[in-house]
Amino acid sequence: MNFSRLSTPQRISAASIGVVALAAFLPWVSIFGVSALGVEGDGVITLVAAVAGAVVLAMTTGVIGEPKTPGTRSELALIILATIVALIGLVDMNGAAAMGLYLTLFAGIAWVVGAVWQFNLSKQSAAGTGETGI
Image (cartoon, rainbow, N blue to C red):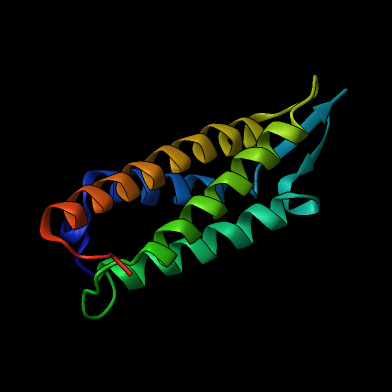
């Protein structure tokens, strides 16, 4: 595994994906000393999105196997997955929110930032070389 192949936005996305996956196993709600883990509810969705995002990122960047040029489809898939995670964190936020939900929300937002940043970098480099990026 060669993590040096990742650009800065991809590293932000990768770190955010790791935090989202970890946060799914932490308490999302805590009230009167009783807490509920993320995987007991919507955390399953965020965990699946994080695993899918990690697989897409690893396969397109060459962290595992040969490097491939990430296309528009894979970058859009990462943006969609990141947006889903951020929206779940935002919608589930309430007065009894615990650490796992806060981490999910903030990591989801960071993942969106990293994914959109990478998408814009790819568009700029494709425009400079005349490639379509598909």
